[in-house]
Length: 496
Image (cartoon, rainbow, N blue to C red; front, side):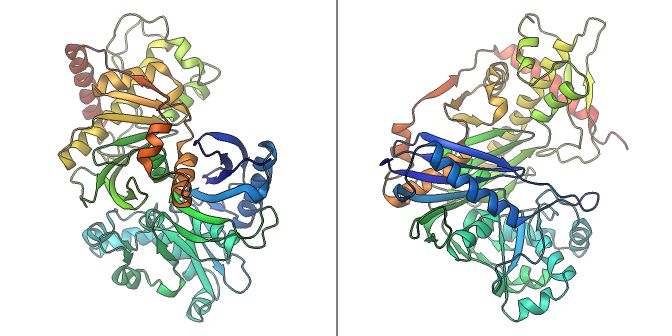
């Protein structure tokens, strides 16, 4: 009961989790709850912000109870969140004027196409490091202001606040209206060179500046708890950070040239570039992250659309196995190599290829091709797509990746991790705690609270990693890459 701890609120796309971390950086307890996904029209995705807040309150109480902890011994709070999802609320009532519009939502695609047709692509990229896409928050804010009756009048009268979900949770915890650099950098209206809301982009989207949150470093004083029942007043919120940047910090990738890859439904690979603002020539995004002290830095980001989802497809549609964990058992007895290559371009190809018209294909089939061989090719495809991202990032930065740190559910597959090390020809490091998103926000909050000096001190504490060293011969590696890139060229522009 007397143990000191840090609370990390990890708010994701389908559920929220609250962790309690001790002063050694280890998890004491956690609690998880899913929330409702709303699909009012095809391609539209929404969340109920009030449901999310009620869930987070329950999870805070539940995690504290599970750890047999006292609410009064919480040192600080860190918040990490699904990025780009945005909500607008009334300052007087504290109520949202519309559901949160989720990053997956495509309702603003036409607005984005209009912006492209007006020639704003280079302007947006040079200021924000992003491409014009409905993925980001700016056009979602415009849509709410344009479509909710009375919204623009309320904004004009200073009644509205807008923010990504970190801002909403902070507001409910403390009454403050703030965000951090990493979440601001995903809105498409924040100038990541000048570190400020961009007047020109705000004018283009007709978004009033007065509704936007104050932007602070990810590690700073965001406010203190007030009137929330599950915690006493006065516990400081010392960290806000977007989920992928939180995972980068949680993996302690805080120096230029270091990178982490999160293996989920897709893959998110972030490559730290330090103080250097680099615009990619390889289809990557430029965004903000943290250095070893928790202060602002730059990174390149690349996304693979289909990673773990290809294993789900084999499970649910091909019925090759009953659960994803069985995929490794299925291929265990395969000894010989083959020429089967699986390109899982189910929704086109993401970075660095960016081909919306590509479609999935399996090459090299023969009469003795079994479900095991197709499954092995599917696992390899995840590593190959990551290889392509690493190559693009090294080309853009001129820096060679020394190692790749990994997290996410698919990292439990030892075959995939070993093949990833082999095809990259670099070591791959998997931490004992793969919940690195929650860890990142907890570490930042702890550093600001004085529990740790910086990320380098945490590196000394958290040395328990599983390391996969490359073992593949160069001849075989080059042959594997040759087959992969030949297959990629075959699926590009498939419908043309």
